[in-house]
Image (cartoon, rainbow over all chains, first blue to last red; front, side):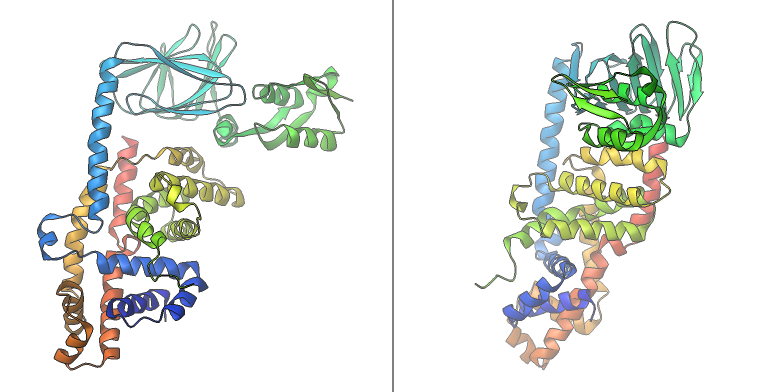
Length: 291
Length: 191
């Protein structure tokens, strides 16, 4: 007998008051699928709540539906009020070193802030302005008013889509994952990345592996693909209050690769120590890498 | 100690977990790309929900399940050698699902009622008769058995069959419309 047939039988016995509770309990405990199947069958059996309901109520979970509908109305009221009061106000959010923050912006767009980052925004009916003030931000922009993303001195128009923007010094590194961006007369498409510097902006096409490395931070990870130890350490230090310092400069050129968690450098340092034969020592304020 | 047939966790599961099955299936299918794996993943999530000791403290079951689904999806991606890039991008969003009812869910509630009526209409007559008498008219089992001239065990078999058929008819994972809705959802996403 399939679990579905058995479950229906137990519900029938329950409905007819012929159920043997010990037998039932043994069956239910034998497999998690049994408990699920039983609840499915019970829910189907109970879906019908009497003749009157057939005409009016949305089955099967009428209570759930009413609660959900009520909650929806409440959420709309709150969102409306919130928008009205801060239509022209600046808002900002930041994530501390080693931190990570997810935000829902007033228009429903989503922003994720990487370690040591700050995003400011101001939304009106006809324009959405976003400022990457520090660090790195992933933005999932929903359709709506014209959207402009600012770096230090640069600005980029964004279509609805998904973007990763990182400020490196005065340069804004923008990666388009979905949708389009336009910097001056330079269009940027999906899986392209633009370095917006005061000078000529170089457009790069990224491989899937490179794109994965850029957005790995959103999973709490750092991904190094064909990087050097110097670059890897620089990347890691963004997440650390106790920084990693390369004492012997020639170590910086060693090629490295791998996937590590961003908030705990232990695995990374172990890999560096064992894989590269680099000596790692810990001082009060830093991890020191020497030959 | 005697465990009740329907424990508090089962009530909670029926009211707060099962109604999100369709939404979970849609997400799972987008994450893993095929409906068979999607069903397995959702079944996995359900099994974990029923094994969660602190279930009563879960304030937003849908968001909680979306997170669980996301973690399962990421585990799967790690195990597979070739990673479809879109999955990683999508996986991020699952943690953010909120509890607001989407219009689809509301429409679904209304449809479910029609589905139930249809499922009931399509039952074999012998099964339908016992189901209607017991469930809808709430007649005592012995009275039903006597009036239909059935043994209690035959009554039980017919009612069980009715319940099995209705359960199957109402399950989103067996219904083809969830696959079609998924395609519509994908198209909408492209803008």
